[in-house]
Length: 184
View 1 (tube, one colour):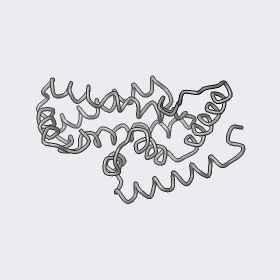
View 2 (view 1 turned 180 degrees about the vertical axis):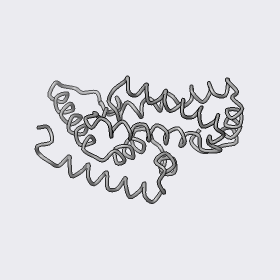
View 3 (view 1 turned 90 degrees about the vertical axis):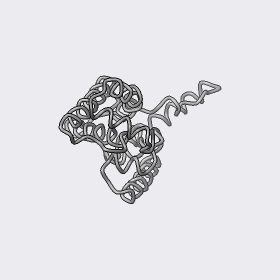
View 4 (view 1 turned 120 degrees about the vertical axis):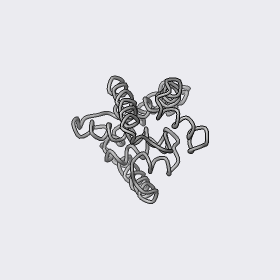
């Protein structure tokens, strides 16, 4: 359901009439990815679960108020999660970015394992020093594998701004990773 297809449009019509099967289908389809997204940015399973619950609560509220999405459901849900995460960052400045398991390779030796853990910690700290928008662009693009249009809709920014934000985030990430004292 990356693009707004006829199937997604039909699903949205059914959701707007509070078809329980359609709502369950939306939840089953999107909640795992939203949870991973929130967990990677928040670093806390409880907060990630709260984010997903609040995302779907807000979706239901918007449908009830006849303000819900007419298209691009995935982007709409990510935008809600983005706003909740941004609010959480404002309230609590010491959130830790979690890296996905796919960033962990199989290692052949204890030395490689130590090197890998050091690299992961450096990356985690560097990501934590990016702005919330930069972090979210990096996670959506490179971890959740979203296209720029979906990211733009989720962050409520033009595609050009997302590309620029991604470029600045990658440049900042490189600069931060080049710092020698990142682990201190």
